[in-house]
Length: 477
Image (cartoon, rainbow, N blue to C red; front, side, top):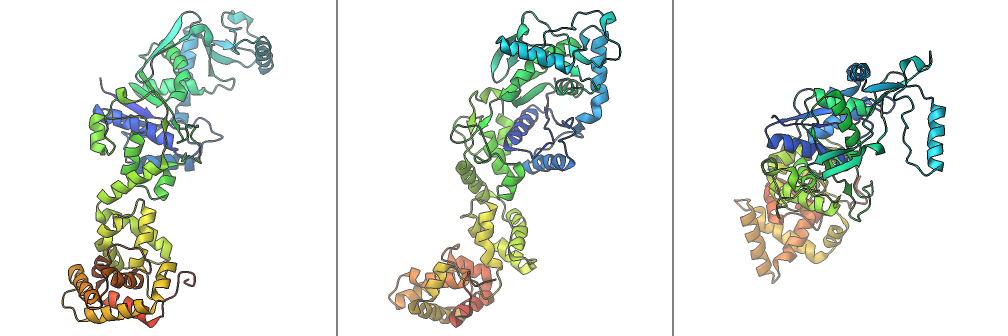
């Protein structure tokens, strides 16, 4: 058997983080078994489905790196096929027409509520003869579900779950206007797409019983179900925006890398021993549903950020530079020159060691592409207001101006010689140098910075600082 899974979101909003995890689990399961991962857009809610949401879903899945097989299926386009199945069930006596009006159904529910009974359709038209049908009255088509015994789902995550059939009523397959319901559409599509495993959130577990009955009525093989516990916030409460229940695109915009998101989402409810850092290749090799827990997982933004920092440090410098350039161009409002981009690429090793997101990386890299004179942050401004610091910086400029080799080692050696000659620690030389070259009290190793900036730019920035012409951040445009 070829394993076939699917991800089937409704395009009524962004691809949220829970949906991203569901897509990931389906993708990994299919790839682990060399099967297929399919995508279906359940756009039958025409009032709420939008093209923008469809594109956001496509974009989010692509950004996560989850390639799907074949063309995405649009559920609404298959409404005729769904209705055809309902009519076949009618012809076979496995479904029936129900002529109850909305007023009648409301009265039934109110009576059941008053008597403390479960609110279920009582099958009024289930066994009535066609000759009793009122002429010209609209009807819905209902499944003639079993009302004795029980329905058992052998769930790969939840174990065997069961419900007594008399607790389920005859669900509607076709509405009075002839349009198919969600439950009918899902079952028909999953069957026609050859889905072997339905992996989804456990909020769909109650749907599985009705869908199981519909599969049986159609004479189709029932797929294997796996219902994954939902994601909660760090406080154990239902996940909300304050916990991080944002669209996948928001995490991209916050500067997270897709491989870090895949790793983090994988570990939300799934484990492989004590392994925390799991590459995509390892995930495909190791993934199984036996290791999915039955308890809700907790979203931890701090843990995600730290994990992203790991992937930032391991990422290819050229790739990070490519991601960084548009962020810096947005910050500066200018198009970076080839020289500036090359400088970023050269300095990336030092920059990425301290950043946990792409936004942090952009902030820390800005000084490499900033125009002269640099703006000073508050601490750097205080440093450059100190006469001793200015004197140390001027002495260092003299020391390095004639260096034949402009490398971090020769530049550091010059600073050590100067510090020793002046009876100072190296930090006393490095502090004003960092302020002059980075406009900040924080940067990658300052002699590495000088090597990346090059002789001309480094000396130019030092001259600006000694001349007192540089603005502070508060006064800079």
